[in-house]
Structures are given as C-alpha cells and as structure tokens.
Image 1 (tube, one colour):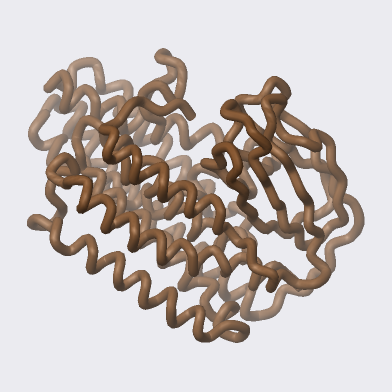
Image 2 (cartoon, one colour):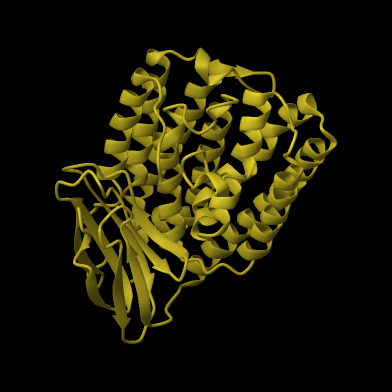
Length: 373
C-alpha cells in the first residue's frame, strides 16, 4: 500500500524495526523434515519464479529481495483470501512464512511488479493428521475471532450512530474504542481482500473515490471538524464490520496460519504504528499498538500448547517479552487510553521498538515449530 510522509525520527525507528521483523519471520531450522522449502526472489518484475509447483502438505516460503525498490512483499492467495505473506522486505532483506496447502491452484501476488501475479500449483493428497491439540488450538482462536468481531460490531454501532446524528464530540470519544477489536484480529481481517480496504484503508492506500471506512471518518472528524457527508460512509462501515463478523465463523484456519498472524500483528506495529502513520489525524496510535500486541498474544496463546511440547523455554521467553512490551506502554497511559502519539519523542519510540524487537525475534521461531508434520 502507498505510504505518506511521516516525521523523520519516527520513520527511522519504524524502518529499523521493519527490517528486524522481516529478517526474523520463521527462519528456524526446526521446520519438520517433510516440509517443502520454496525460494522466491523479489525483483522489478515481481516474484521469481512466477510459476511454481509443490506437493500438498507443509511448505516453508523463503523470500529475498534481490535488489528492487518496487516490490517489497509476497502473498499467497486463495481467490482473494490472503493465506500467508511476508512484507516490508527492502533491498537485501529476507523473510519466511509457513503454510500447509491442499491440492489446488493458488496465486502468488507481488504487488508493484510489472507482472504482479503468478501461480502456485499444489498437487497430491494432504493427509488429515491434525492432532486433538491442533484442533483445540484452532477452536480456541476461532472463539477469539468470534468474540472480537462481536465486540467490533458492538463498538461500531454507537460510533456510527453518533456520526449519523452529527455529534462530532461524541463520535471522537467513541472512535478509539471502535478501533481496538479490529486491530486485534487484523491479519484475519486482511485475509478477506475486499473487506479490509473498505474498513481500514488509509488515504492513498486506495484510489480517492474508494477511500472509506474508519479513516475516512477519522479525517472528517479531526481535519474538517465535522461529520457532514459521512452518514453513508458510517452506514457502509457498519455493514462491512457485520459482514466480517459473519465471515470469521467459517474462515479456514491452520495452526501455523495463526502463528504467522501473531507475527503479522507485530509487523503492523512496525509498518504504521511506530511511524505514527496509522492514526495520522487522531493520533491514537498507541491504542492500536496495544490492540495489535493483545491480538498477537491471543494468537500465540492459542498455539502455545503446540510450542510447549517442543520448546518450553521459548514459551517462557515469549511470555516474558509480552509483559515487557506492556510495561513499556504503561508510562503513556492516560485514563482509559493513552496520550496522543505526537507527545512521544524519538527516545520513547526507540524504547518501544526495542521491546517489540525482542518479542518479534522470539515469536519468529514459532511457525516453523508447528508446521504440520
């Protein structure tokens, strides 16, 4: 997605953290021996190879930027649903992610390349060998998704009602609370390629005539000081979050996909929250920041029993790192929320980035540990 300029000090911190996260997304040698490893290069053309084949089963995608500034991510799509991705790979950086794929044809999507879309053909039979622990992890996380989308609808209803009523101050007060449930489950929300831009696109992420959702209303509130003309946007936003609530009930989930999501949420922090880009008008970025970390922790908690049986000490380190991140946020709490992000200086953002760095480095080991064997 397109990005707008941000304060140079914040940008430097965000870029540094993005590099740390990108190079540490599951490069562990603990992936099962039967996992297929596939290597891809990002070039001006897009993904190379552009056509690939693999047997059904666990696959580790190893992606390296081979020197392009045009392409920084690779996604694996089933239709318009994002199954897995690695992003923020600037020149020289690499990253990995893991998936277990059934027979079928999938899209390799490298936005920005001259040939953005390629094909991954998966053949053969996938053995149905999920253990009761794997099924329990998936059920646990699905319950979290359903709870979070229920909270999202419940928080969005009064927010959009205030927009429609033209009550600017009440709408502003309700904005941050409405953002929290969405930020907790953002990787799953993003997997529905059509819904996420309608709900959460920032200005310049999409064509001007498609800019809608939370950030369209945010701009009207804090830049224009009005809700005039926002009633249709509010009604559409409420309909879209209700659609998201319906879709998560049947979304296909894999344990390794849940683990990847825990890392992706930290990537959201590095890509936009640290830079102050996400909530560029309201400056409630720390609210989003904490929600992303909470969502990451929930995803990790779901798969924790699968990790604990192989790396119990890793579980202990990750739990300690989550506590460190929350402790780093505590000085900026104000009432039920946080101070405006613009009140933080370079030293503040650097400290937060260091805590996320430590957590991301440990979490990056999780997906490879639980790729289906």
